[in-house]
Image (cartoon, rainbow, N blue to C red):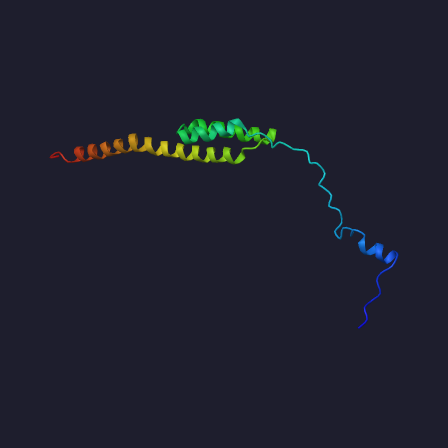
Length: 123
């Protein structure tokens, strides 16, 4: 059994040379500038707070003003303003129904009794 002859000269130097990177050099991403998000409209936040507290007419008024400002300034907060506006309108509808039930229904009830009493003398 014969073995291969030992390497000589350049072959020996190549065998002990450090290996090169098999993978190419990874480059870092270029630095990115931090861009701050646009601010949230303060009136939109006030709209939501007023709606949740129960001051419905204030929420409706400030909601429309904040939506107008959002269209002009490009600030964030459209969803907040819409949520406050919708809750404000629902609150206004609740108040209308409440006052209708408090004032109109008793007056109708009294009117029915008055008409029954006027038509039936034995009542």
